Image (tube, rainbow, N blue to C red; front, top):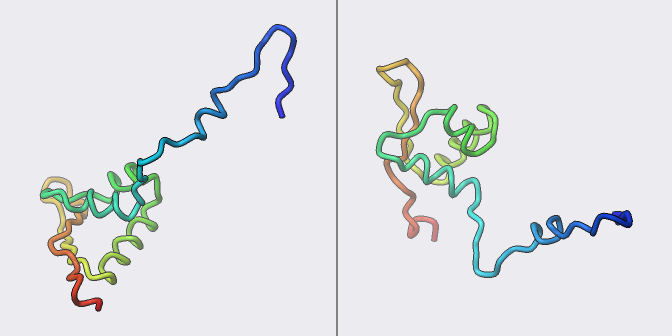
Length: 98
């Protein structure tokens, strides 16, 4: 617990920051990855790393996990700078998992 000096009131910003409003659902990193890969132009690994705050090998492993889950992910090399671009071209069939 913070001790207050006589001249400064206690700070309540830390306690208010931890309170979440009801009805808001936080999206998982997997959901954000699917959204980023659903872009018609696809996404590069470095932009995915920055957006998801993950390292390259972790992003590539997550993409592999999506493939295992049934997503069709196209990989191609950008003609502009030779960097790999990933793009979702098909989503898993929900009836196939039953």
